[in-house]
Length: 196
Image (tube, rainbow, N blue to C red):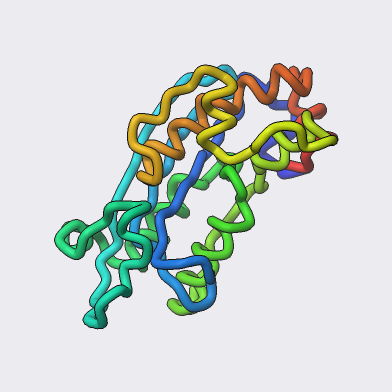
């Protein structure tokens, strides 16, 4: 069990709910364009929200990926911060929080790709994956577990799908519903069920 989780009630834990928008699907070859982080509690209380674009110097057409999906323009990136600054800020937000994402493997792959290129590392506690939590409630795969469908199932509105902060906020607001469905009321239950 992570040191900072010991003897801490579930209600005192903080979760760093993360989402990224990227240039493609390969954490090795593609890049993070936008980062959204929501610091929340197990009851859904939102304590902090952070979003940033990441400065990129791509000159080849098409390097921003699926513009029709994420809507990110080169002018947005000019307002962003460097990849190193992004990782520094993320590490601050991850300090004594549990990393949460919907399909955490995807976001971690991209964040690790950025860290590897800069010869640095990201200090994760977790991860806790809301996609896996949702699928565990539906072993026969009757329902879709895409974020837009999971949020709709719990009555959570995501105002700007495929915006990093909006998706992170939607995930943070779904998290308490997933805890309730899994009957997780203690830190020990969370660790034993999902290894956070």
